[in-house]
Amino acid sequence: MLESLRKVAAWCTEHEVALTFVLCPTHRDISTYAQKYKLTATYARLKTELAAIAPTLDMDWENELTRDKTAFSDPSHVVGARLDEVATQVAKGVGPLVKKLSP
Image (cartoon, rainbow, N blue to C red; front, side, top):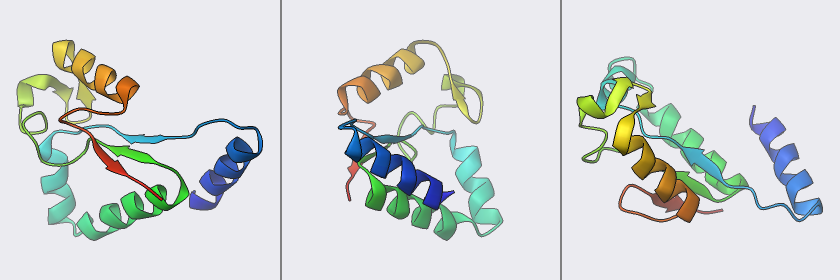
């Protein structure tokens, strides 16, 4: 997967296309699951590897949104006004839910 993303990044560079990865917020139930099955380090490594390829907007960290079960229709899908908030912050590339990871 990462090799394919590197190829995409190379194409983007060659064609002067800005590439940014976005890690969308998930409910903390997913991080609890990841801890239970010892996947936390793997996910952290993925974030680092993505950021080495292109700028990455990380919204998937423990914060007030990821702790709010009512903001999700299921652990992976933000809904309602909170979805609008996420979309706005992604479009702007900044906001209280965004951590910028860079190559």
